[in-house]
Image (tube, rainbow, N blue to C red; front, side, top):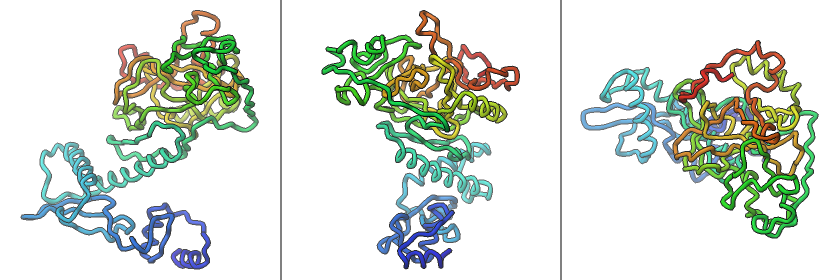
Length: 416
């Protein structure tokens, strides 16, 4: 491998490599190779940066930490006195992890020397933090919305999900075509002087938002936003969902067996758009096939698009956004609305999640996987109500009953 790297560097070309970036950086430093993409240059090839701390001991008058140096293999780890280390954040995280291990073993004070089990745990936790940091950075590089994404796991050693791709919009499955069918409005001011009712009026509906962008129609009613053909600008109050996630959100590992969840890091007012549910658009036949597979695995991310006709389903199992990690609750703080922007094919609405009440910073976000809409009128019955049941209505008796762990007073005990 090293010889291939040297030959490639000399020739000014690249070669296939299955190493992760951190291992490749180690190799470059050992072989004294410079690589701009990996951040290894002549200026920093001899720099020593602490990547993580993995052991601790205390002598008579000195505290020492075992240091893993960034860009160097673990065989180069070394003991360093505390006074020489300039990494307060890493030191704080190390002691938080150490305290967690000590509490687990019902110990109250830090020993002068750590046992092998504790060192192994600290090393795994340090590597977990690094992998989650890299995933967090990747998510934020991929997102196209203002709201930032954070990732935390203070519960176990599970790292980023495998076989999952972060996307910002629907991906179209085989044999499905999305046509941009919307006609733009002629309004100079969609809120103050809507021409022919603006885009909602053209579809025989009322404006869905107030002047602060909060939804003001009943769940079950559709939302028609202004689109790329409209004369109004990006600040039009009838453009909300298309602007994307506005809040900082945290993907976190739950401590009661519900897997990953999502919490907001900022206060969210009632009736405010929070996120879209996106994934791969597939046919109901394909959803039925995948549904049986997911059912055997004990989880599903299928969402029927049955606003007017049960033809398409969104599958967010392997392609999705933050909504992929939102958990169920029988008393949720998010509600689904069907939204149309450039595509007004009623069989293919965008699925938007709005807050049902004021949500405080730090609170977990949830929606009801089996939501029910009161049939006040004909329009309000056109509502998606079968998340997780997509493709499985033909054989419901074969479903495995999944216990609900939402913990709400109104819990139905089972998700499906």
